[in-house]
Length: 545
Image 1 (tube, rainbow, N blue to C red):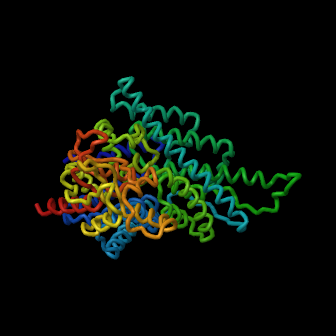
Image 2 (cartoon, rainbow, N blue to C red):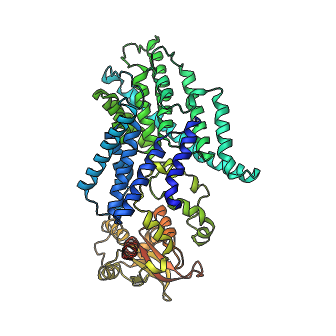
Image 3 (cartoon, rainbow, N blue to C red):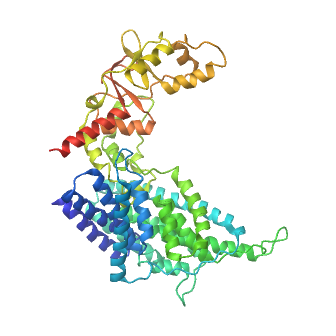
C-alpha cells in the first residue's frame, strides 16, 4: 500500500510546495509520476528487468515532454537519464525501447497541448546570432554557467548538512522543518519576489520577453542569481518537494542576461588602447537563452537534453552552434565534480559508515562528507532516473562477500618467475595472481597489466625476460604489487563493490576478519565478473519464484 501511495503523496507535497511559491520546479515530480506509473505497469504486466527499464524510460520522457511541451527533448532526456546509465549487460532491444520512448513523449505532448494549450513553457524572445566572431563570448558564458552550476550543487550540499545539524541541536520536529524552510524563503522573497515559483513568468521577466515590462539591471540580475541559489538550496534542504529544472533555467537566464548586458556595455565603450566597437554582439536575450541551457546541463548533467530543449523552443538553427559550445564547456566543468551513478549506494555508505571504516585498510577511509556530495543527482532523485540497478542493489545488500568470492584463485611466491605466474593465470583464466609467503599469508597482488607495463620497460634494459622474478618486478616500483584494500567474508557485497568502485579496483583479495595487518590470511578473491554472475543468478532465481 505504501509504495502505491508514495507517488500520490509526493505529487500532493509538490503541489503544496509549488503552490506556495517555494524556489523549486514541477519537472522533478512530473518525471517521478511518469516513472512511477511505468513501474506499476511493468510490475503488473511484465516482470522482466529489460521491459521495466524500457517503461521507465518511456515514463521519464513523458514527464519532460508534458512539462515543457517539447517531445524531442523528452526523448533525449530518457536516453541520457535512463538508457545510457543502464548496465552494460542489460539486453535491451534498442528498436522497441526507442519506439516506446518516442510514442510516450508524443502522446504526453499531445495531451499537454489539449489540456494546457500549444504555447511553450515560457515566451521565447527572438534569437539573433550576429557573427562567428562572438562565438568565444558564448564559450566564456559556458564556463561561467559551469561555475554557477557547481555553486548551486555545493550550496545545496552544505545546506543539507547545516539544516540537519540545526535540527539535531535545536531538536526541531522533522515535520516542522519544511514549514520553517518555506517561511525563510518567503521572508527572502519580501526583498526579491522574483525568486518565487510563478510558473515560468519570472523567466519571461528576466528575458524581457513580455511587452511593457521594464528590464532588470545587470547588478540586480547578479543579486538574483545569488539569492535564487540560496533559496533553492534552502528549499531542498528543508525537505520541500520539487525539481531543479525550473530553478536551473531561472539561474541560467539571469546569469546569461547579466553577462549579455555587461558585454554590451563593454562593447559600447571606447577605450584608448583597443576599440571593441567593431565587434558585433547579439542582444542580452540571446545570451540569456544560451545561459539557460548551459546551466541546466551543468546542474542536471543532461547536455543533449538542454541543447534540444532550447533548440525546440526557439526553432532557430542559428542557436545550435553557440548552444553546443556553451553547454559543452559547462558540462565539462561540472562533469569532473559530479557522478551520476551509485546514488543509492552512497546512502547505504552513510548508514554503514562506522562499520565500513573499521573494515577498511589504512589506505582508504570513508569521507564524512560522502553523503553530501556535489552531485544534485544524488539530492534530487528525479535527476537520476537510472532505476535499472535498484533490484540488484536490493540483492547486493543481502549477499555476503563469502557467497560471491572465488575460492579457486592463483597464488605465487616472491621467488616465482613472471612466466610461471602468467602461465598459472592462463590456466585459471584469471587476470591476477595473489602474492603469498610460505605460510600463505597475503603479501601483494600481481596483475597482467602490471606485468605488461614492467616488461615494456625491462625490454630496453635486458634481452631475456623469461627468468625475471616476481620480487624483482615488485621492487622496481614501490606502488606496484601493493594491495590498496582487502575485503572480509562477512561484508555485504554492496559495500564491497562501492569501495572497489571508489578505489578503481577490479580485483580484491578476501582475508579473514581478525587477521593482523602483516599476516592477512587469504581465503578468496572478489572480482567484477563473479559479482555480476552472482547478482544475475540470484536475480534470475528470484524471478522464478
